[in-house]
Image (cartoon, rainbow, N blue to C red; front, top):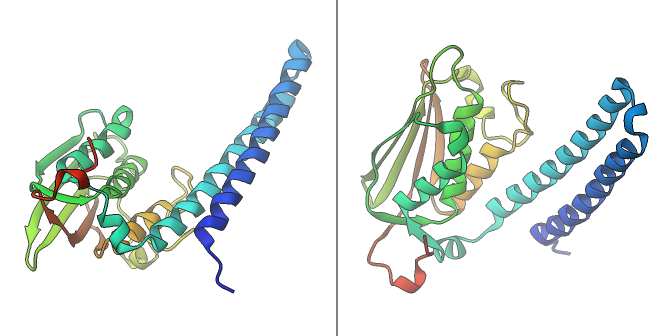
Length: 233
């Protein structure tokens, strides 16, 4: 029997979200009914219940994202394309409240990439934010260029904490967290690599000693693609 795991996970995420929402609602109702009589310990317990239900939902959504990123076909991804500059801008806007003015875009070729690359770049920006340097301003540099063999190379470099280079092989493995900083489930980079590889590319990481450098290499399309294949910006 062949199991359609993305579909199974979609249903599972829906059911888990419904159950988690029910748990959060009952915790909030209990807090409201107790009113001023609720003590600090009870309030702490209720907040922990609410937080754990939200975390459970995020975990299931992460698993669904991992399944989708590794099972979506090449043709389907490349059927939904957008200009690279717009994809990068979309990823930056999603993190705007955290990034402020710390991103420098050096150059971006006028090419088309799968729209899903905004999720990849967004994850790499979140990773830089999560491991931002202590005691100094975060700096992120984004550069894109056309590489040999009709490939596109995008580098995202930051001045954060980096990691032990001996642990680089674990970086993209699901549920592998190289640091307890920032929490999370260790799925974001696995999902990012899944989307890049599904698009016919590769995603590699380096700890530079003064931060981190992620390099995305993938095919690209010329901007002469018919308008009906362009996702509206």
